[in-house]
Image (cartoon, rainbow, N blue to C red):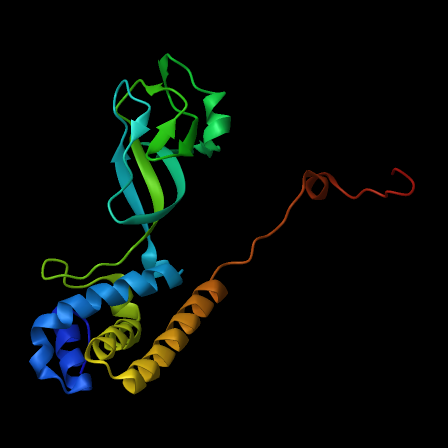
Length: 212
């Protein structure tokens, strides 16, 4: 059967484990599975863009819901994106201004912290690494669509741990680990190679021996 929704995943868990008596526990097994593979997966399906709003007169913005890692921030005005520069918290301290303005730098503390108080309610787009979470209200996500095997095998590990079946738990743990490994490998291979350029290559050749 196809596994494309939260309900279908719970049905598949009952079918694969032959434990229809655990129907009320299936949601718990899925939550536990997500908490494990969210730490191990680094794939495109877990990357997202989140629009935040700078608070007028404040240097702080709260993190997006479900964010696991922040990979970058940009100020957005119409079609123009201005990347912000990330600093360490100690380095940002040296750049902090008491006046209002357009942020240039930011640091990650217990919130997103800018170098100045925002002089406008800017749209701030965050490139984030998110955690997946299925529920009755969130019935599907990109990870389930692309890798239903990761969801299924991971949830089966939790189910068999719950009933104390070490053999089956170990079996599906191996399947889960292999599925996660392949997903991460595919994500790594799909990244476009960076092209290194220099000003020298655009201006012409240069002989380091003759200085010509």
